[in-house]
Image (tube, rainbow, N blue to C red; front, side, top):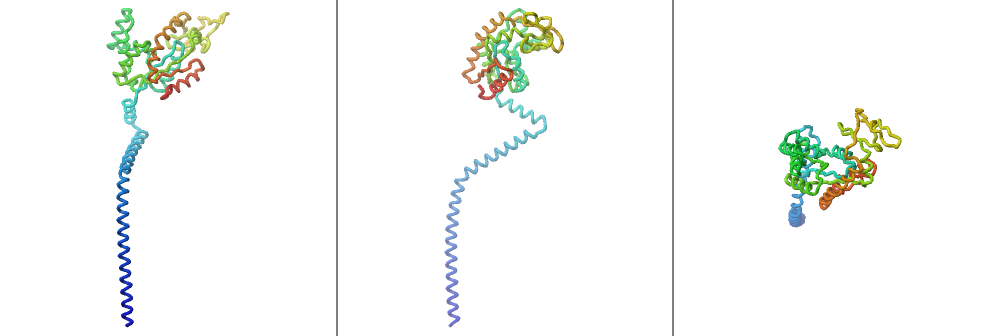
Length: 321
């Protein structure tokens, strides 16, 4: 009888345990199915984000790889590839440097050239180079000058077009002395548009007319080298003055060669008046032409050289108008 009691008790415990196990399995299955459903819903919601993140990560990895490759690549070919990419896809830095005679274009232009690594192009230099090289437009210019005529805008534009296609201009260039009139500016814009480019910055050095007279009339030049001196601001070491405080011409010699200095025929008070009239009458409208494009910067050039250069640097930055 004791054996039967033990058997019944054991059977009930086994049945109870089995029942609990089944219940647990059912509950577990239900929870698992619920979690699985929620997991699938969550995965469906997260998948687009994962895709974006994956693409972004791959792009970032690619960018990191490119950046690393560009930074550590020791070969000239890699550096050249980077240069070509910027030359092809980055806007060319095409500047026009304006200012009346004596404003400081000859001082600050080369500094901009050296800092940005783009050439400063003078129409006079380009014209002489084209004539010497006997290019098609150079020959046309030579024929006009030989006949005593003035070189037309079309010829000058052609000379500029040929020059800016040279390798040193692929990142940009600085125009000095052109355009001088609104018509020339419009022709320049048209030519640049055909090249897929445009003027990106116009910098005007501003100096009051009365200050310019002192600057211009005191200027002396070494013709061979182009070195410039000024009786007040940068006198040659050899300069001597007469009883009225004026420099003695015979004493004005170049510091490096000892050769005689000269004054330009148009560096006089009377000539300056005409030059300034021409500048204000013809050149200033060009500034008005470019101002709507938001690319014109005005620099106060009637201050110390360091002060002028500081303003020039600000004007060269993007949005530095």
